[in-house]
Length: 392
Ligand SMILES: *Cc1c(COP(=O)(O)O)cnc(C)c1O
Image (cartoon, rainbow, N blue to C red):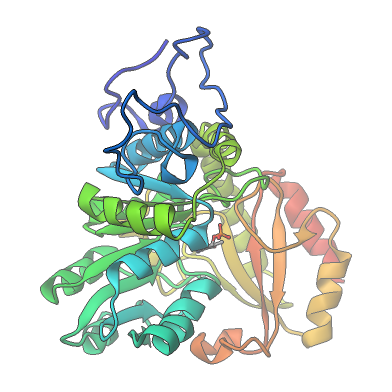
């Protein structure tokens, strides 16, 4: 069966299951096949084809079958007009920055973001292309307003932010951006479209690292940008066709399969992370816990107005111990794995030490070193026991 014209009148779970899927016309298979070809047959007279076009299937760097199916699923999950999928979340971020910032223009950026957003906007684009940027605590609306300049063309925020879990008010910042004639892009990776859809809060562009919750199984990389068709077309033409950040058809297929269970998985991540955060908060050896779902979190009120379903599976915490004490704690964990990335089925923890180059941008409680924990799909009781025995 296939649902034609699937739209937001269907629930999120129905769109997660059926979005982008149809019966294969050739075989009758009810799942989309993997099309690993890198090129597609040309018409009788190909001489007037625009070889840089992303319309129609010509060459897999210009678009292809599995990319298109995944784009359709993600577009439906975000209630967006259009979507482009790319090789990684960072390809999606650089796609936005390269498409919408020119030499002499300025960007306002959250001071707590994924490291590549910081590297691109704070170092690479300013040094190479004379693009200016201001890092700002985007949980403070006055600070965002004060950072806007006449040449500001883009405000880029992350909420909840990696790795501090700071929460920024998407609706209010969209208004600041639009009053300044700038675009607002929101990195939604920590929330996933199950918990937060920036497009509904008037953001212009939403970025997702598909590597994280949307794929959810830790076995493929991908990225997406969602928004109005003219903006997405520009990213498609520049970042995908000409910068070459195309996703492989196999990865697009894996991510499409993973995304089917997104709502089920997010419900569990939301529930378990809240339990783990509450447990950690009750422990005397825990110095602080940052989780937007806790009433004590400074972003809790804002998070409640723009996140639904829950507050996701990401949290940060620090211990009343020194550098080595933090490493010893991780070495005693048996269920939780020490590795980067997040949003996987398995729980992952990273120690970010006090020497991290961006410490000065983080709130004071982070300065002595902290953990970023991605609460996975194991039994919450097992995760709590694992953390408890590691406090020894
Ligand atoms: C991981 C991550 C990215 C980058 O995604 P990749 O798929 O690793 O390139 C971007 N933003 C956030 C918030 C992330 O956590």
